[in-house]
Length: 383
Image 1 (cartoon, helix red, strand yellow):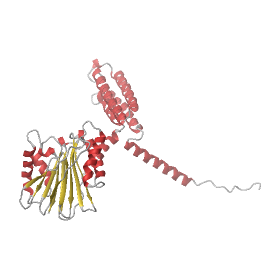
Image 2 (tube, helix red, strand yellow):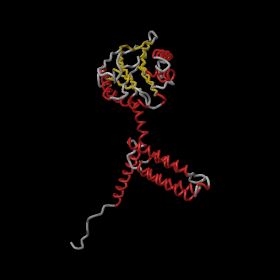
Image 3 (tube, rainbow, N blue to C red):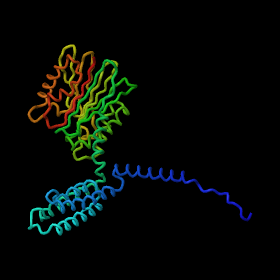
Image 4 (tube, rainbow, N blue to C red):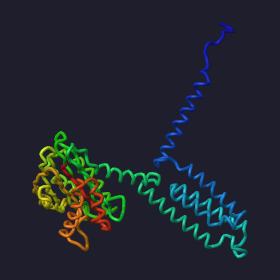
């Protein structure tokens, strides 16, 4: 009909603005998360550092006594940490331009000390070259700086979580302490533990990877994950053979390890101790008050194809204590194994009256505080 009125309606502006705002907020949040993880663009840091360069140049020109020309190394150092190599070159070009402007504004360096000297240029260039090398290394490794420290922290925490002992029923107490070599955060010693057979059996594996500190930390992380998967998935007598086969398949240049596998019945107190070249454990008998070595036979992990492991058997009665440890606790350049074990058991006698609560950490402190090796100690007590 001529002159008819259109019935179609335009969508209200309110909902459209809200949708646009929501999309922008989601996009900004994703960009922030990606940037923190190291997956996003580094343009925010680049813009901030590019703005800092002329600000420092202006300060040098107007207040040369307070703002030195070498202050340009500050954004360059931050750029080496924050930027990718391509972005870093743009920052270096801005810094070079700032040096040229400062030289022209302040005049020749022979006219006074507050000038751009050849030494200033060399310092800025050296710092820039160092930052570029670090940035290229990070790019080759594929770990941005924002995730590098977080990743190392996460790896350390994973080892600690995997080394956590499960809770035990009333009448039992277990604790362990781990001290890496040289006060580092990573260790070649680790523990994996689990309660199997519907919680009736406690299985604990204490392992000492070849090497120490950071050098052995990566292998310890890999092995702790693999051993944690094997523990409880196989019969106890098959664990060490499976672990031995796993190490052999890695074909590491320094790929051996020592390990001790404890299988403890939490109802009867009977246990089996299987060892792969590990130092003996010791048991305190509450009846006699004496320490007895518990030695099981078996080769190192990762050395022989067909390895056989013979268990040592025992029982933890009321008041008995079992200690398992790595060789860093009892061996050293100035003492042999027997002397170290005598010293350890002698110090441990002091904790009989306190039921060994909190004794693991203190024993390492008193016996092997300054030893430059990884040290681990596991205590299991029956009240």
